[in-house]
Image (cartoon, rainbow, N blue to C red; front, side, top):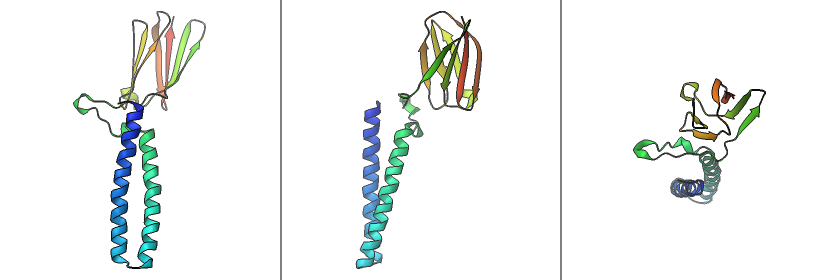
Length: 151
């Protein structure tokens, strides 16, 4: 599922959910408070619901892994904004990147000039390296992965 399809699905679901709840709230307030007071209370409730539905939609768009679809072979990934730094030193190259934890799920392997990073929440990345290297040291602290690569 690509990013555009995911955004459309989240927008559709929050809209349908919102319409159902807003309809129920309006019906409840009009039934309980007939007249102008019921309409006024319904308007306040609808405004609050619209605000919270926008907040929920924004949350889901930023964190689609909340609904992990890893069962049944499907896996939802959101990795478009991942960036990393490669720092060349004398005889080392250092990769620094923000990676989701926990620490016990962070795994780094190197083979065929490809550095493979697996971490929590279904995070998987491959970084192509220009030369043959070997992993010298791996540290992970506060969501930041640092891999020292010996040339």
